[in-house]
Figure 1 (cartoon, helix red, strand yellow):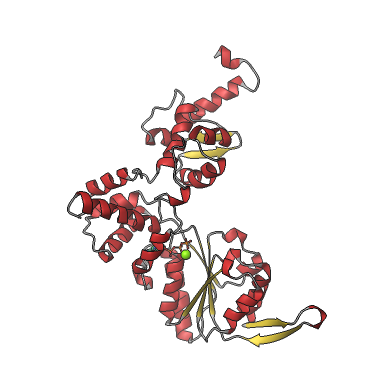
Figure 2 (cartoon, helix red, strand yellow):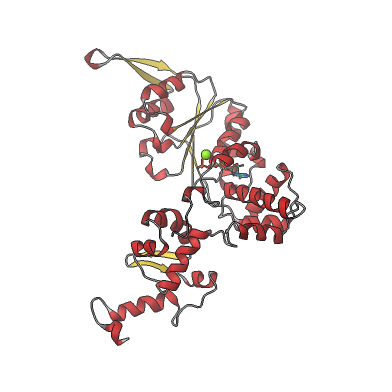
Length: 363
Ligand SMILES: Nc1ncnc2c1ncn2[C@@H]1O[C@H](COP(=O)(O)OP(=O)(O)OP(=O)(O)O)[C@@H](O)[C@H]1O
Ligand SMILES: [Mg+2]
């Protein structure tokens, strides 16, 4: 029934890491700041923070890295430790449910160590409060016992650097956000940057690829290095099975057409949503639930899985009156917008007909 019958989490263009990504990502991660492609601003700022700390011979300020999945937050945190020549301890918000979990980690840190706290917005409240004090004063109060007899034993910590990563900076409580000396906002990558990512990864994976082939993969990767690396692996399979293993623009395009990732990085679900919006509803406005029924999906799937990228690409807009397609959406699917140009035509029409009038019959 559903045009998108597999789990949306399994789609080739999801920015989240799947099992295969995790297995190969370690090998593809840049290890030094100057190997890290793109994010010029974050890189320059971070490089200053690290250099200054090295000159002073002390641990740098705590660093917060925020941005969508797959843009290199974990990679950068490892680079920070490598550039400082410091060991790194890796944990994540969901792994720290009790303040005691955090106390155990903090008290075992060595001087100058980097503590990487992934998904920091998902830490429990008590752990968060312990972290405030640890970040500011390098001290924690360990509570021993329960009830009225409980006592707080202060514990000194060696200076360390916290590197927090989050995909949802807005969810961080301000007192936590304020305790970071430096925040790096990661942005989606430009096609030329992703082309370099693909070229670099191809070298590490021993894939022969020409610049046009790398550009073709980059253009379909939604501004995200993780997706670029994943598409490269699928293209490699195709090139190896169907041809001699070399990747040109033509081979890359053929391979990704097989996997239904189009020239702009839309997959089957994205295209189904756009297609319904254009063909069935004349470009909108149409309500989310109606649109979801038309493509045989849950509203949440359409809203959370397909729409964010369509909105980002300027193909679809969310308005109080429903979803509307832009002129670019008509062009992308190779369709001609109705007279007066798609969305304007459609909304002008419903404006004229109004609610509950029989204008539909008249028109
Ligand atoms: N600037 C870059 N240059 C080269 N490769 C990169 C770059 N950024 C990310 N990558 C590659 O993309 C993959 C994903 O990066 P990473 O795991 O650091 O993303 P993330 O932001 O931590 O994602 P998540 O939010 O899911 O944890 C890695 O394998 C890495 O090799
Ligand atoms: Mg990560």
